[in-house]
Amino acid sequence: MVLSEQAFKKIDRELAKFPADQRQSAVMAALAIAQDETGWISPEVMQTLADYIGMPAVAVQEVATFYNMYNTKPVGKFKITVCTNLPCALSGGERAAHHLKQKLGIDYKETTVDGQFTLVEGECMGACGDAPVMLVNNKRMCSFMSNEKIDGLVNELKEAGK
Image (cartoon, rainbow, N blue to C red; front, side):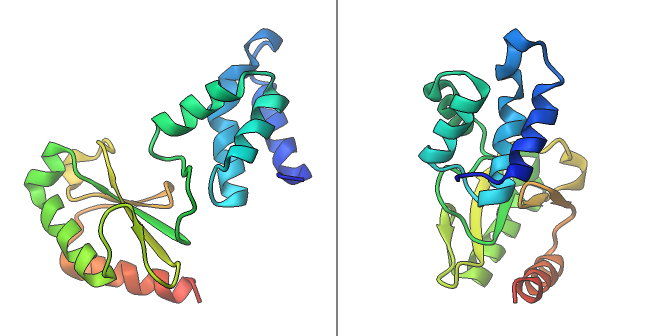
């Protein structure tokens, strides 16, 4: 089975929020649930969700590939998304990204050799006043990321990944 019974129960709760003829409205939530369980959205997972929701697989793929919060390729245990939109870039985002690249020894769209970290660019996260901003695994927002805060974050995640 591609997804667990618990994942399907969570998806059912999301599906229940919409009329029967609008089940496809739950696709984003279903993708997030599947990704939380599997780590990424494989073609097999997309097909499973399409069949379960009752929509074309290509429509699920279109959603999964449009939004950068969905991983359509395997990623590290910790995906760090750096906001590179103009306000963040002008407020230290480029500096923060450079420091993070040097610290991890990778560039955007790469994963560290140990499989712990993947680094990606992200668009506006809606916290321009907190720049530079980063997201960890699409769930934890980190603001005002100085080099020292970046070092602390990486060390914290390394410890959590052991």
